[in-house]
Each structure stands twice: as C-alpha cells, then as structure tokens.
Amino acid sequence: MSHSFKLFRLQQIDTLLDKSHARLQEIDRLLVDDHQVQMSQQRLDLVKNARYEADKSLRIAEQNVKEQRLKIERSQATLYGGKIVNPKELQDLQLESEALKRYLTILEDLQLEAMFAFDEAEANFLETSDQHSAVMTQVAQEKDELSAEKVELIQDLERQESEREAAAANIDVPDMHLYEALRQQKNGIAVARVLEKTCAACGSTLSATTFSSAQVPTKLTRCTSCGRIFYVG
Ligand SMILES: [Zn+2]
Image (cartoon, rainbow, N blue to C red):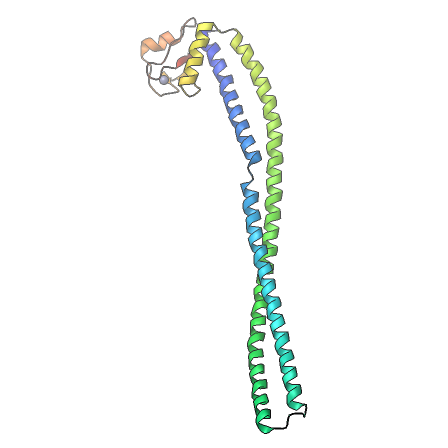
C-alpha cells in the first residue's frame, strides 16, 4: 500500500467523521430549538386574547341593550300608569320615551356588530388552534426522527472511530504529523486526489515531474499550489 493511499484512506474516514460530528451538532441544536412552537404559541395567545376581548365587548353590548329595554319599560309604565295627568309632564315623558327608543336602535346595531366581531374572532381562534396543533404534531414528529437519526449517527461514529484507528495504525509518524498539520490548515482536507493530472482540491494542473513523483508509492508529493498531499488513483 502506497504512503499516499494510506493517507487517502484516512482522509476518507476523517471526512466522514467530520460530517457525522457536524450533523450531530446540528441535530443537538435542532432538538433544543423550539422557536417554531413558540411562534405558533404566540399567535395562538394573540387570537385567544382577541376572542376574549370580543366576548367581553359582546357581553357589554348585550347588557346595554337589556338595560335600555328596561328603561323603556319603566318609562312606558310611568307614561301609561295613569298617575301623571299633567299634559306638560306627559308630553315630556313621551319625548323621553321616544328618545330612549331611538337610542335602543343604536345599541342594538352595536350589539349586532359585536356579535359579528365575536363570530370572526371565534373562527380565527379555532383556525389558529388547529394550525397550532398541526405545528406541535409536526415538530414532535421531526424531533422523533432527529432522535432516531442521532442514535444511528452515534453508532456510525463508533464504527468510523474504530475504522480510523485501524487506518491510522499503519501510517508512519512523520506522514501522520504532516497529515494532521495539513488537516488543521486546509479546512480538514489534507489529501487531494489527482484527476486528469489536476489537483481535485484546488484545481491546479500538475507538471509532468510532479505527476510522476506523485505516482511513486514510497514518497509523498504535495501540490505546489495548495500544499495538500497528492493521491493518484
Ligand atoms: Zn492543490
């Protein structure tokens, strides 16, 4: 097995490990993220409050109509009760009774408006409540899936770790040091494949000398442009 092939194998495993670790971090972040539920809850609280206010307004409007009707009843009772005989007083009472009736029409219109507003708020609440339930179900399902993926990922990681151990065991110490240093400097990618005489990592073309040097199994050849270790295969 050539030196570069051993490092290339190690690189493949490390790339998988990097991906698994990154995904694991992402899953942990997603599992504690509840902004979707919070936003949905906030929307629900708003429409719930709007419904409460609409209900309150409706009750007040109903009460106003009720009281106005009582006032009219009392006024009519006095008017036709026979106790008041003075024509001026009777006329005043008649006018007052008419005024009370006119205002009752206004109050009844307001009650009708309040009923419509409540119906709308109620419908809005029911719709938002359904949407909230759907969000909760969806989020719970997503978290179940993420948890299942996490379990699998941890198993993958254990397998990849032991594969890495085996792959690293037969690599010379100086090669390993170079590999680790390049991994740190080069965003995790220390070994670049040579495809069509081109560095697959940075895209630069290999000279004929570099290309033949990269094919020697006992030595490591590095890209003159990006510095990564070449693997021709
Ligand atoms: Zn390169």
